[in-house]
Image 1 (cartoon, one colour):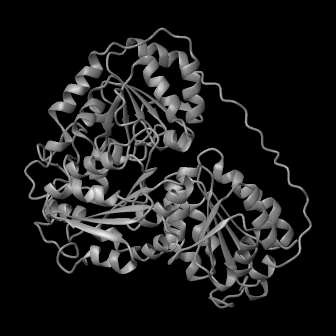
Image 2 (spheres, one colour):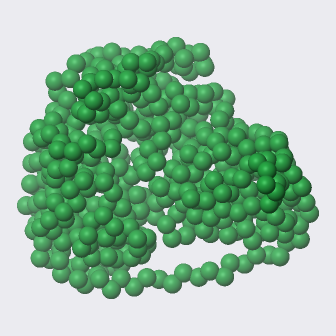
Image 3 (cartoon, helix red, strand yellow):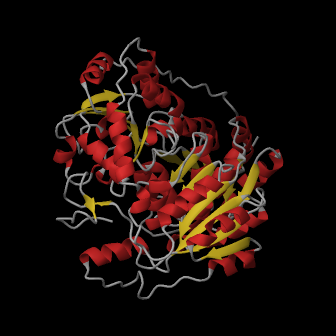
Length: 568
């Protein structure tokens, strides 16, 4: 057996159904052996970044490592953005890069390059992966590949890179029947009784659900805990979908662009149970002292360094989020909070409806549009949002059911993510994906429309076209006296309906709210076909509410103004 054959066989045994790649000379042996198995679908993309984002989307839905392959040099470096996205968002992935033959590696020579397209991808990727290795001998592959899968999935999940020279790919190996020596001891959560005491004492308890709940497939047990103690749940951007939108205990999306009622609830609660969220600046705002004031915070996370990092004086509970929630759910307790706090939150939601934040906007109200999209998309397995204004409108207003995923690039915030990631998500679930993009981000990986057509994928694409880079344009209005360089000035977008038709995808454009239902019915007229809907948004439509930077999370624009400059 040669190394490439072993890798192909290994992926089959790990129940990998799809891999994503763009062919190149240094991965031809790998592709050939994977093809010969006839058990894994090879999805050829049109850019390595597209392949790696597709692997990200696949992993988030399948909850096993996504696999992306690329050749050496530019192929390998084109994977780096998605590696970073997987690293920051705790997504398990295995990136396999081909490398020049070992005799073409420069080694310790004081030169820049020896072999054609030779590139030290291991050094480049090390800061944004959990583990990086270059295979130097064929017999290393068995241990390293098994180790890669273990590392990607264990503890806080993330990406791994394996770089394999071409001559090693075709080298014979002798298998040693690798057996993992790692065992996992169950965690004892000693703070459970203290938490129960605080739940009993509190009058305004709140659970904050983050990416950790989604990554560990803990949504069902989160719901049971919320129902058991009658505690409302708010969600971070990456935690959306961990509780169904229509569940009576779901209290909204929080953060920089969170629902106003959810941020007020977060700011005024007296007990906060943070489950699998980092409490970064987009979740808390800049005023961390105000965030933690007058409340007890229990912070549950698999990574100790994330606790008491920005928000101090939290009670740390280190461990697997799902294990913690299971332990909490097993506790014999008669505590069940009354409905007064929950009813207050519901009243806040009626007072500060997301539909009213942009009620005076010209033309289509994006928040109304998002509600409509989700109401027509019950057949979708996942909603994927790119990065920009539309991402926040989607997070504020999509009605995500319990059996649907919400997927976006959080920590990296990579424009161009959603279209290729929707390919991976669609293939992983076997259900249609709804891909929501802005005109700016959509153009970054627009070439993957051909991948959708070639593979006959039922991906429904909604392009929110405001002919600008809207989130940065809003930032320029706030801090640069409305000078719109590179967001409106010097920027343009094509007619995406015509582009879709050129690729062979049915498409429609809407310019006012009266056509919403008609267009969405057309989008879903054939569940199994791709479709593109271009939604024209007024150029000056902002994203509100938005935390007034430097002020407490309860104070949001446009009703309150920032007192410091921010990141976007």
